[in-house]
Amino acid sequence: TQLLEQSPQFLSIQEGENLTVYCNSSSVFSSLQWYRQEPGEGPVLLVTVVTGGEVKKLKRLTFQFGDARKDSSLHITAAQPGDTGLYLCAGAMEYGNKLVFGAGTILRVKS
Amino acid sequence: DTGVSQDPRHKITKRGQNVTFRCDPISEHNRLYWYRQTLGQGPEFLTYFQNEAQLEKSRLLSDRFSAERPKGSFSTLEIQRTEQGDSAMYLCASSLAPSSEQFFGPGTRLTVL
Image 1: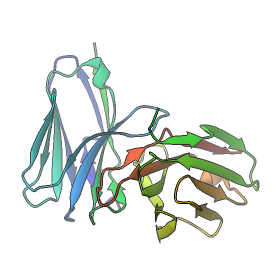
Image 2 (image 1 turned 180 degrees about the horizontal axis):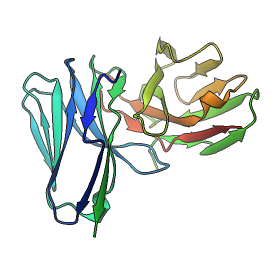
Image 3 (image 1 turned 30 degrees about the vertical axis):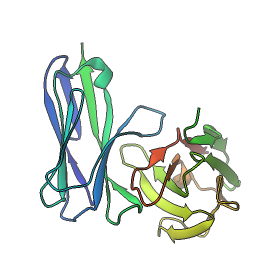
Image 4 (image 1 turned 90 degrees about the horizontal axis):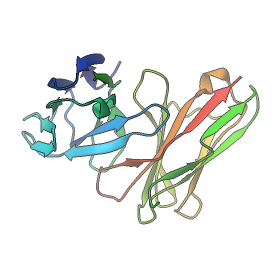
């Protein structure tokens, strides 16, 4: 059973479209990270959110942490082919401790 | 490059052989983590160290697996008597406690024939 549920599992969109990826759990996390991973490589950290209700922006990417610190979303505006990859959310139940990962969302942006 | 490095990047071995992987964390990071990732899944936690002390091991880490971090710097992960089910990407990450931000290496892809 996955502690963190990500949806959708797969997303194929045209360049310029907007999209949102969701990460949900019944557990409370002290922090949550979003990573992007390319085939054959390790995950690359995009952002860390710590405070319930927190919103962080990274260029065209907007990350939100739920008020209860149980869920998070990643919104991409005007997607580009370079955004293609596997997006993973990961939660830490204790600060500074191991991460629990979702299964990931595979994003494909077609030009 | 001052990121996390792993060696080798790829390893092909026959069932029953022993393999050892190495991870060099970001130099000032005191925590080091090992994860395993299979196709279509997110990484799963195996074990972690703070300095040279191994603080937690997952139930996934059978007695054929052993990890060390002898001087609190690099770490090794050894798998004895490999099985086909051990085939996966083995990822290492490091962090500076108490931060929960973990930075990953490129991984070691293990294939057991």
